[in-house]
Length: 129
Image 1 (cartoon, helix red, strand yellow):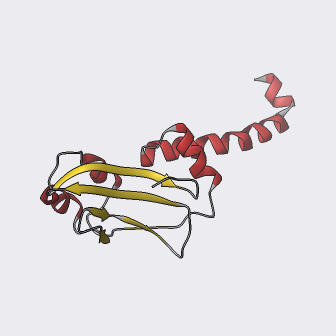
Image 2 (image 1 turned 90 degrees about the vertical axis):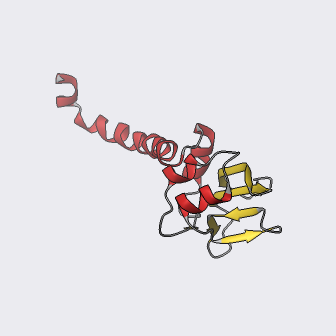
């Protein structure tokens, strides 16, 4: 402790170096992203703009939906999607705002009224559909 008392100024750079790590950990905890995806999200701070469905929607409710759940399960937990595409087989619960290429993608792929795929990722220009 005596070391920091005399050299308190060394704590300042250490504090600023911890901020990116804390933000990456926040993205992992809040959105359920992997470390690499959280790093991409951190690198896009200021470029990202996402519109999420309002009302019942929450990240925790979104993560409750698994392949095999019915469309009714989704409606009960999250409400109606922002958009539906591809003959009502692709349900979007988030959209990019203003044409941005960086956003939090939340989509369900449906087949015969059942969820076949859950897309939960940070979308970048390099993201493959």
